[in-house]
Image (cartoon, rainbow over all chains, first blue to last red; front, side, top):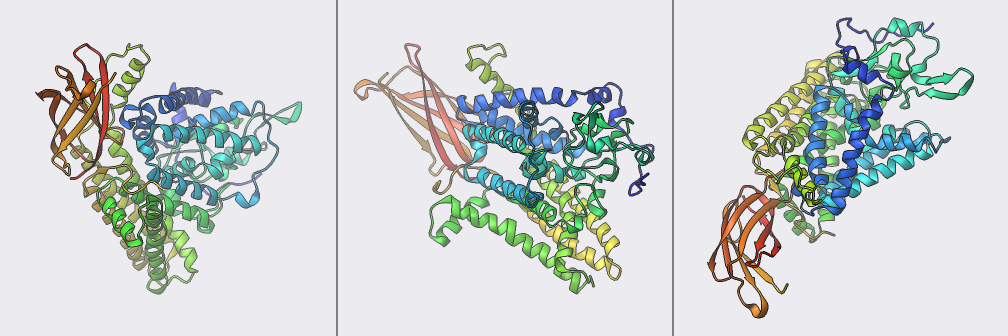
Length: 486
Length: 101
């Protein structure tokens, strides 16, 4: 018998799987497939419209649904519920279908069992987004979706388990980090039940009794052992563990958002946050990437691009963007996080290595980083909320089948000045969240001067928040290529 | 269809707010195309933005003028939907790059 005592669950916690009808639906064996099929159909329509529909982004479903609705809905669902977009991921539908024919036997290489590859891909995606103006190109957006399907299929056709989700998918990594702030997590209901469990089906899967090598229900493919799982990092909400548990002891349960960023406990499939330099790098890219992505939408970035181009004597966007990315994703974190970590040691009396301090406290920036993503994506989502209606009307009418009527552009969404209030509110709440996390970490880790250390990290958060407020107060400017495209 | 279009935008450089757009339509032997119905549609490069629509009036023979309100800085894509007197329809698309705030 094994004891699991690292977490306790309030008996009054809300459990989504106990909600009448919805809970029953989600626990059905093919619930995930049922959710994936409509998303897959929409993805296919987006690809077709992207490749063969209008070239103008506001009139195309590929660009409208991807860059306005998908991103916006994603951050709101993560904020108010959990990682349900990974649950309904259409890439996994195709991959599951392919696995009826392919039976991979190889394990994902040990040296790649970390987040470095996916961090590289996330940065690449952010870079390509700016460089090729993906938001303005239905054609490139369609190819991005196709590339996602192809990569998921290829990776999971060659390697066992779910390496695409855990080690490759940039959207998945974004969701994992953002879902640390979600109010729901997939978790055991009663740890005592796990203590007496002998089969561990939640991780091993359910085997055919007569043929033990035949798995009839997968366990967690992301190596998260439910009794030792902490929080949402690496959890795709696939609900395989819910299906596999013979004791009906796994739920989608409420918790206090962001607590998993504070406590440095051993996590199944992840280890200690304070020892995961790759996860710390991921949250850093997540947080500063939010500023970078928002910067691409305001007027000063074009002046900055022109200035850098003249400084280096180039007229191509590629090197100029590379400099901007280096400044914001490398230099700024080095200065802010590195500087705060250094002060934590010299002024706060922290004795541990500088890198340990950097890693441990970098998680405190997640609430603020998420808030900036929320403000940015939320702006496009709320101001363009109903634009999918006329775009769909146009798409159907273009097929010579105008059953939805003529495009009606009357009410695109909320007024931008109203949404700006939401944006400022988001950043304020994100700042408060980051302050709470850094305060809690310093209270746990610092014996001598916890308040000094908190002050240092609070200052770092305040500087980032000030940058975000400045960005949001700039006039928006939506432009394509300013310099040459090379 | 032997048609050609030219366009003119003022003020230059274009700024957020009202701009005047003139479309000149010519046919065979540079002869102005008169009596056409011209509507303008302006889209931004980012999805989720509402297009701006306006009718253009024939100010001179073959010259159709309209004022539009461009609500945001950035690149705008203008489509002139032209319905010729014989009911044929032609679109002419062009960009207004770098509208300043």
